[in-house]
Length: 89
Image (cartoon, rainbow, N blue to C red; front, side, top):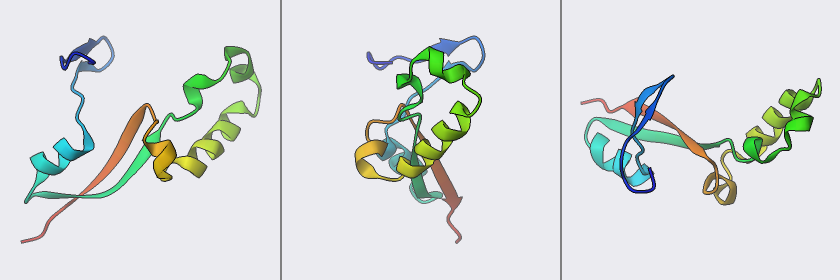
């Protein structure tokens, strides 16, 4: 992906990566970007040992929700969840 090429995944097939600005360009006139959320900002940074604790997933979810719209965290998130809506004529 860093070289600008598609990646093949066993579970998801071909993965294409788009920048947020590319999505705006491709959807121009058809779709509007309503919101962009940062996803997996801290999840992968945790030690594996703590991931087995009973309440770890709930705490991680709460932490991710707290920062998902803050620009400084959204910019470093592993993924973006982009909410699109149709433009009406």
